[in-house]
Length: 173
Image (cartoon, rainbow, N blue to C red; front, side, top):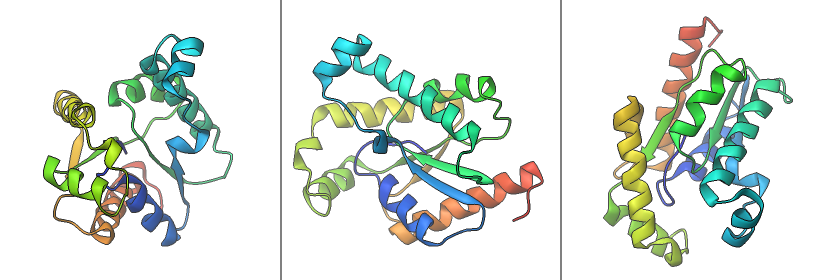
């Protein structure tokens, strides 16, 4: 699941994780650490290149299934176009990419309020959110608008997606 800052990705996945759904393992992209832009530039050539390589590594890690999960949920800020090509290469046949999104006004309120990260409420974040919406449209990715949904409601929507993926793969729900 992808989305810009303030859409509720982390909170929703933490809520989902707390529900302890059998066979479901939850992961947070940023748990690997996010180097400063200067380090990304120096070591990877750009922030975009770092993001692509870390996305590939996450997919490889999840494909290796170190936690013996039936289904993995990964949340983070990465381009869906970086995810898709690596799924098949890692042997993942069944996957769903979801975009969590919200209105700019809601994102601004969340970043200034509960998140306490007003520095992220900037034009670049809005441009990033618009870019992700564009990728979702272009790639046919399901969008969950979190503007008027509680975190529990977003976790409920994720649970529905998990059930649908399990059904599609013939896994036990």
